[in-house]
Image (cartoon, rainbow, N blue to C red; front, side, top):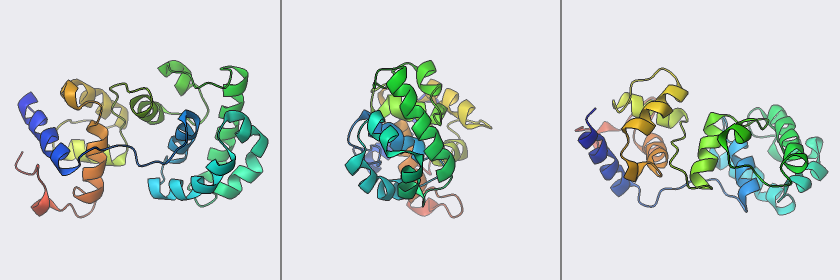
Length: 202
């Protein structure tokens, strides 16, 4: 797809969804990272419901360690894969305390080394918190960007690589937010609402 067309697509989407941002509620950098870890294969709505009470008592890695895996599970039990996520979050918190002095690292290699933190999680964190031009690829971004022809990739990682090459710089910070919102509201998996799509002509 030509650069000028990609630019027009994001211009239209930015008109449809002004001021797009992550819908995960959080208090600080640590709670945001935890929310992103929990959001894997789960909706933002379900994560926000779980963390509403959790973040009243947990705000730091040390708080999470003191809460413990068993009690953490009681807060997140309605989220998919909660057993694995609880184990990873406690392990992640211990590493932040012992290795990084309670601070979340900024470098990609250090972030992705944390338990439960994958490429998408790092990209979301770096984009939203560190304000780096990263495009995080979830199911919506993967579906929409490949469906409409911005990229042609078989995996989420390849989709991210291609998107970060073809999306104009001015849209990089909000590109994945726009694609997510469009995927949720218009370009749905089963029944895309093409009649009400502002970019269907492209």
